[in-house]
Length: 184
Image 1: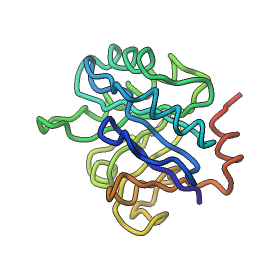
Image 2 (image 1 turned 45 degrees about the vertical axis):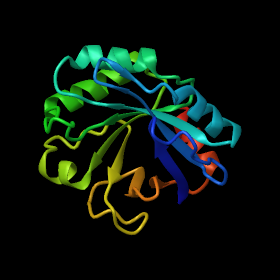
Image 3 (image 1 turned 180 degrees about the vertical axis):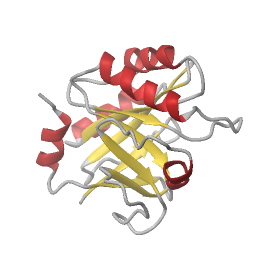
Image 4 (image 1 turned 135 degrees about the vertical axis):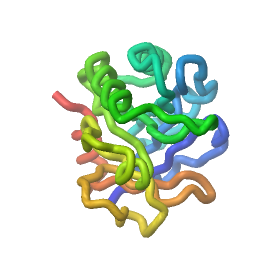
């Protein structure tokens, strides 16, 4: 398994040393852009990490959110793109159909990127009805690394949020992850 972290604007001083991948929050809804995403991604790239970006999905305006995400994230070819599907600070969340629409639209807009779905175990088991995760599932379940309590195939497992969000990826080597991240 490979080791990585996911970071947001609150994690400006994280260390990428010794990590295999880093996924950076880029956008949220249609109005928020992480002002540190370029620097956070640059730090990861300098450490030789595979880089990804995620969008925190709000209900409504799905096509506009997908466009906002791909236009505002600091991605380059080979970076992973992800949809963060969970409850908003207001307690709302995008529907299952909206989640699927967002993933499909990001894939349409960026066909040469791998697109993943991030959600927690509760959303996967109790809200998801299609099992659509685009190119891969990134599951949050705070148990032993690499052992999320789901039956679905997953690519990344977020297993803790202390001291920051830590993840493992189900790839044998960093070269295998890099190859997978660059679809033909």
